[in-house]
Length: 64
Image (cartoon, rainbow, N blue to C red):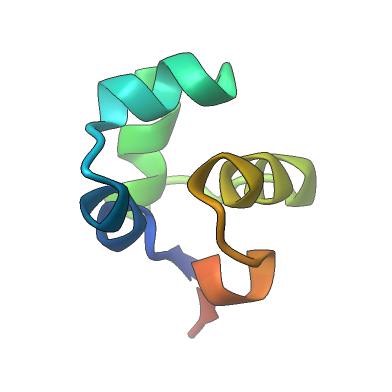
């Protein structure tokens, strides 16, 4: 399962999950699931989040 460093990336950009939701087009609920590791995003969503957060997809994802 992948663990996304969403909170860390948001903190670095000084944005909230709500902001990230608006910027990425991914629902806030889905982002919360990813942060809590309740669901795993598709590769296309990881890429979209990485682009918005200005990080590489590889950095954003930690594989457990």
